[in-house]
Image (cartoon, rainbow, N blue to C red; front, side, top):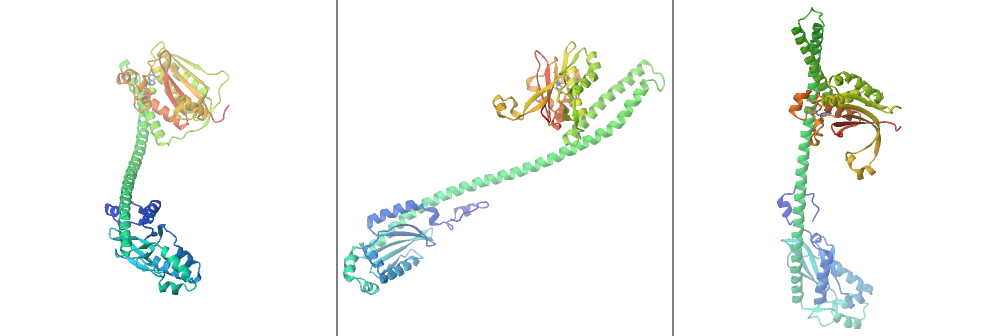
Length: 473
Ligand SMILES: Nc1ncnc2c1ncn2[C@@H]1O[C@H](COP(=O)(O)OP(=O)(O)OP(=O)(O)O)[C@@H](O)[C@H]1O
Ligand SMILES: [Mg+2]
């Protein structure tokens, strides 16, 4: 059977017998065994050919007379002519053909059919018909150089059989081969069906993959549009809002005349809320830029110790108001610099420190520390076995530790999602919009760094930033 690519095979293509080939369905070794058993039983040589004339198996008993004739020039050419004719003879129907040999022997040629189609043939012989008693004249003529005595002696050694018996043997052999063919075809059909169903599943899977890819591309496009939209809106909101804040500041300072205490309180509230809104808008703008990858980092060599000092001085008033101690713990000799955007790294540390102060009750403390550390370059960072073989790199590790309310373990992943806050009551109590940590996370990604959180002991949380150092110290 010709190899099929099977991609578009339907059930008719699969079950058709028009492509059935003897050589594909029959194992040659087994065929040889079968015909050898026939030769052992009946003593007549057997050859099996495919429809294209290729010999698939044979079990041949060399005849003494043939051997003798082949040593003589005349005998050899006569023999070759007979063999060539036998090879060419191929019955088209179930009607067997009997081909005579010049020795008086015969070849019996029977077609092998499968489902009404010729798939090969069996050649039985040579055998000597029972009725041949003497050396025939044809042998004497064809092998003039042979010795008549030798011929008389050797010819009777050839297996003798009646034509009818040979016909029956051929018929029987055809039956056996038919059975083998049938089971071979059945096995081939089963495997083809299996192959076709695997191909079909594969095609379906590919279809699904394409559809998924399309959906993913559309989502990405939508996401990009959303980020653009947020960026534009935020930008448009910022301008009028700065005017609102500016004018309420001027009013508060009495530039337009003195205000009553109630008026001053109202104006201050307008300014405070305006500032809150501005912070939110700026965060949204940052997030959308980070998500769309359009945030341009201005990279310099950043001194992390200075960053920590800056953050502490920015937050000191808030911390003092909240009665939270704020401290920096950095090596006196300083630290290697990291390559990054100083403002953005400060923003990340500030977001963490703001949270730490916000979520730490009065009397607690917040410590900002930095040191050189190692980071395993994989997700499986916590897997000790893996860490032994995984590549690692040098990083600056910034830790923001507080003694505050802490974060339950099951919330530690989610808090980095935009707008996620641990619970609504804490939101009401502490304020904010839930954007700070998602910005930190994206800022770290933009710096090829990482942010993680773990519990502090005995209480509180520790946020850790890891930013790679380009050249090892
Ligand atoms: N140090 C901390 N201690 C306890 N909970 C924290 C701490 N930092 C963050 N969280 C929890 O994670 C949530 C998300 O923090 P995130 O900074 O993203 O938002 P937010 O502080 O609520 O608002 P925003 O930062 O936008 O003003 C917080 O609402 C809080 O529930
Ligand atoms: Mg925050």
